[in-house]
Image (cartoon, rainbow over all chains, first blue to last red):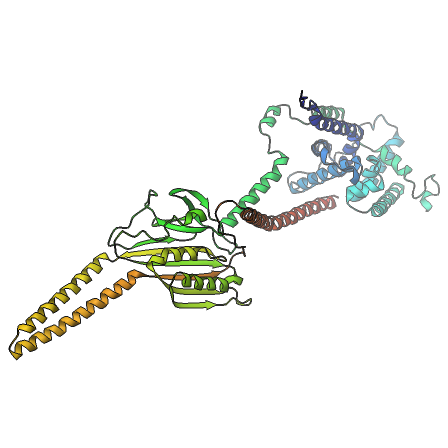
Length: 189
Length: 400
C-alpha cells in the first residue's frame, strides 16, 4: 500500500514574516517617534523660527520617516541620525518655499516671546534673553549645529551623517559654533 | 582660555552650553502633540480619504521591474523587426505542405517557393496570352504572389516555377537573389557553377567580386541558361545552396502560343507558295515568265528562310530558360545542415543553436538599449539629487 503524500500545511509561514516585519518596523518607528518628537520640533524650530511652520514640518518629517521606514539601513547609521536627516531636508524645503514667498510674506520670527516672563525670576528671564540674543548672533548653520547637538543629542558621527561632512569636520564646526556662542553669551551687553 | 578661568567648564566640555541651550529650548504645544500623536496612531492615513487611498492605489513597486523589462523587450522587438541589424530581412511567408498553408517564419536554410495566388489566397492560373510573373520579395507578400516556405520533404512536390499550360508554348525565365556571409561568396559561386553542370545549363555571363576586409562584402552575378525541362530542378538546387539563403526570387513565364502558331502558319504559307512557284516554273515556257517566277521564287525562299529562323529562335527560347542569379554578401555565418527530411539530432541541435543565437541577439539588443538608458537615467537622477541638495543648502545660507 502506497503512502499518500500530504500537502504542506505550513502556508501561514509564508506570510508570517512579512506581517512580523511590518509589526516590528512599526514598533521601532513608534519608539523612535516617542523618543524624538520634541527634539525634532526643537531642531526644526531653530531652523525655521516659526512655530506654525515648525509644527507642519515636524509632522511632514515623521510622515516621510514612516513611509520610508523600510528603506532605513542600520549599517549606514543610527535611526535618530536618519530621522534628523529627513527633518533637515523637510525644513530646508520649507525655507526654500519661504524664500520664494519672501516678497509676499514677512518672516514671522515668533520665537523668543517669553510668555512666562511675568512669573519667572528676573535673573532667569534676563539669562534667557541673553542666550537667545547670542543664538541669534550665530549664523544659521551654527544654530543648526547647536540644535542638532543639544536639542537632538546627536553624536559627532551622527552630526556628520546628517550634515554630509566628515566626522572630524563636524567636530571642528561644532567646536567653533560652541566657542562663538560662549563668546556671545559672555560678551558685555 | 581666559573666559573659562572662573567657570568649572573647559573648552572641550559643552556642559555649560548644554545648560544654556536647554534653558531656551522650545517645546511643542500640547495641542500639536496630541494632534501628531493621533496622526501617528492612525499611521498617517487621512481620516476622510482613507477609502479613496485604497481605491487610488498606485502601481506596486515590484511591478516596476517587470514593466521596465516589458518596455525594453518591446523596444528590442521593434529594433529587430525594423531590420536595423544589417542582416537579411525576415520573410513573411506562408508554410505550404501539400497544398495546406499556414503562417510561419522562414528559417535561415528553409527555401521559399513562390506560387501565384488570387486575392482570396487561391492558386491563380495565368491567362493565355498574358505574361505570368511570380515574385517573392523580402518582407512583403504582394498580390501577384505570396512566397511559400516548403520543408525539404515537401519541396519536391511544390511547383517552383509558374504553372505551364499543358501543350502551350511558354518562354520561362527566373531571377534569384541569394545572401551569403562574406567568406562564402566564392563557395556559393562555385556551387552555382556546379548546378549549371548538373542541369546541363550554360553560363552566358558571370561577374564575381571577391570579398576583402577593407572593401567589405563581395558579390556575384550570373546569367544562366537551362533547358526548360531542367528549369525547376535547377531553381530548386539554386534555392538550396549550402552557404546561401534566398532573399528574393522571381519566376516569369510568357505565353507565346499565338506568336508560335502565327509564325508557323506564315512559314507553311511561304513553303506552299514556294512549292506552287516551283510547279509554275516547270510549266513555264516563255523566258519572261520564267524570269518572273524565278524572282518570286527567290522572294519566297527568303520568306521561308526568315520564318524558319524566327520559328527556330522562338523554339530555342521556349526550350531554354534564362536564369539571373545575384549573390549578395552579408548576414551572420551559419552552419549548413543536412537536407534529409524529418527529425534528426543534428537538425534539432542546429535549431537549438539558432534559437540560442537569436535569443542572445535579442538579449544583446535589449542590453544595448537598457544600459545607455539606465546610465543616462542614473546620471540624471544623481544630477537632480545633487541640485536639490545644493538648493537646500543655499536656502539655509540665505537665512540671517
